[in-house]
Image (tube, rainbow, N blue to C red; front, side):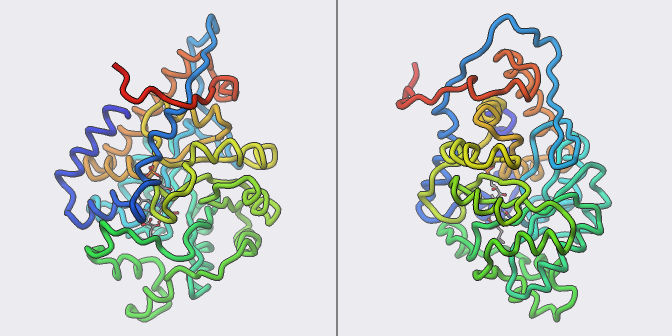
Length: 355
Ligand SMILES: Cc1cc2nc3c(=O)[nH]c(=O)nc-3n(C[C@H](O)[C@H](O)[C@H](O)COP(=O)(O)O)c2cc1C
Ligand SMILES: CC(C)CC(=O)C(=O)O
């Protein structure tokens, strides 16, 4: 765990309201998946190279036609105005200042056009299949028109997962926040129902969204190689391995365990990305060595936003990017292409209490 992530989390705990904090922190069910996510990365050990020229480490990459300065992306997370009055606009500014790509949630709490204006850097838009298809279609087209360069269709949320630690508290102001993007064509009281999850969505939606917008569509929430192949066969331009931060089905395999299987199945056809429990440069290096082209950060960005607004988000992304460059150098990998599978090995029993 990076010391900054810890410090920003501690600060966020001080400044956030109790409902917002519970909503952000909680996971589904008994929270096994949420709790397991971080530790799963430490089941791998590094196999560094020696006497390699690492004086200059280059973290840049091309991802689905976009040139990026860092492989750290902002994951789509809902309702940033719960964390900070400037909401997603502040997140977009912080990400752009760090040269990091923002994935804007379908449940953003500010109009996507306002966020797009603030996003001086590249951004993608995350889509949920909604009961009223006019809502997800309208959002996808508006996002394309506002400058999004890809869509991320979240596939693991036919229904919202039950989170015992936060469901009873509710989310303050949620109707207004839902209506801000999805309710434009509806009466305010109808917006929430129309924007509700549509549980009948299938992989057909991948090609439909691609045809509607002309944008590449990634599928997020994949944890199996055969399922990744099914999504790519249906037209997916990329896969995001994810447990949704342990907020959907509890007791699923950790992202760190699912990633190699997904990379083996589709990594030669499309870029595979990953999120879940990534909290340090070493975690990110491990994910990249296991075949991820880039990684996404969820809760750490929320803590950074609550702790310091746009400047906090920038500090988080800059610090983790610098941390990644440092451990890449020590591992003998001066470029992302040099971060290959031979750099890691899985160990069966990590030392539980190192002395
Ligand atoms: C408070 C919260 C809200 C989220 N909202 C969304 C969302 O709107 N859409 C989505 O696809 N994923 C959502 N996610 C999941 C994240 O995109 C990501 O998969 C997860 O947070 C990564 O794990 P991490 O928090 O350990 O970094 C949310 C996660 C959290 C914690
Ligand atoms: C409104 C929710 C569906 C947003 C979400 O994905 C989450 O809270 O995990």
